[in-house]
Length: 96
Image (spheres, rainbow, N blue to C red):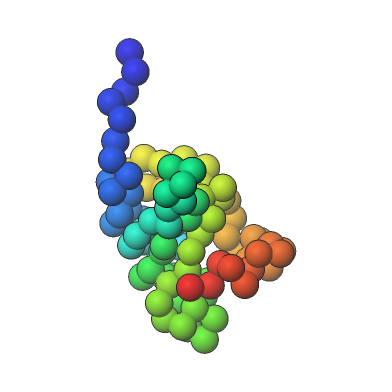
């Protein structure tokens, strides 16, 4: 049996962790591409201060590209954010 589809708003408020188990933050909102009807990012706030400096994020939070999401359940599991921040060419697009 197929599981019932869930509304994307169910992601709001979920904690976000890296695949290594490091707390990243909490989903505050979603970035949508309405033309393509897809989620293309998660707005994450309540950030782990050891991962992000307030000067980098402007204390607002970050946008995590949805392509980094590995699984969604009680929590959202993403690729290792520390490695991505240091290596991703789109780093300037990550900061909110």
